[in-house]
Image (cartoon, rainbow, N blue to C red; front, side, top):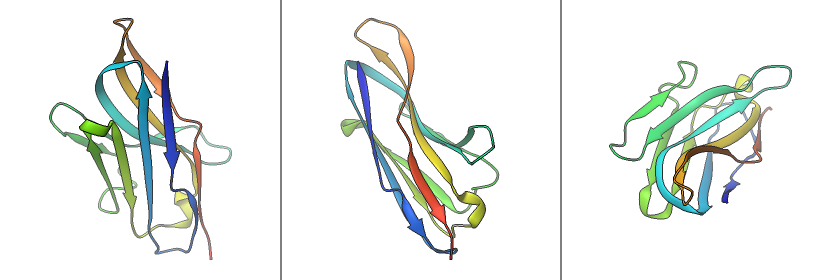
Length: 121
């Protein structure tokens, strides 16, 4: 139905930057919201940031405010997470998430497979 192609993870030193990208494709009629979540080892998955397609409204976890920026390209159904001033505690698997209306008419959440971000010296 809907496929999410994530890219951009990797190893970076503390204080460094990375950019994650996620492109949604498939039986999409409308994208309501796109975002990123993360899951560190031994912890629950948590919100990082989301962006609403209709008005560009953004929402950030307190832990990343001022360091991460989320942006979207509605024409390409793409969401980008720019991460600056990375800290070791940002190490996690980052998952793309989209809320879309599909050809079935239903609104559905879809998840990417995740991309690993490791912040270490």
